[in-house]
Length: 212
Image (cartoon, rainbow, N blue to C red; front, side, top):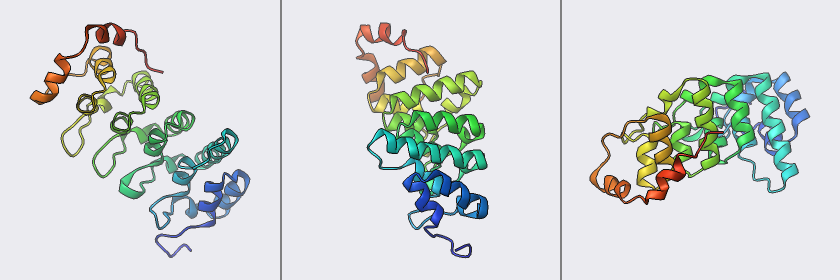
């Protein structure tokens, strides 16, 4: 298995099924399994985050497995899979706030990891309209004095602010501009028109928003 570049290892299966004890044993015996990608370009930690579990108990088991894996090796949070997306990016996309917080705490450097489209976790939160994950990220960035991540630009030159405007998420826009003083620049005419049409009560509402 170690010589094959892309393979579905027993650890992938254990992580997907939320079999925490078995996953720990496998990773202890074969640490290399933890960073291997399967044919779909996903690591065991990716699969634990992406679990299709619908019941709270199943979801909790997968979260427990993911947490156990990063306790053995925090750098697993930074493993780049398909489209260069990391488990942190998937935690945002899945709006899994528990794992998002665990990942950021275990591996702070993971916040700087970008996808193949040069998107940060914040870009993904705004693009996928995951408002809870967005607030968790903002709160963490603020506490860590890492607000510079909010100014990262993707391959199209867009920051999270640009995406918020283009997707008409004006609460996010107002939050970034008024709470984090993100400068409004290089926003096209159409986007500017959208902003100018904001109702007055939006300004009052956004002043009450706080990051988690």
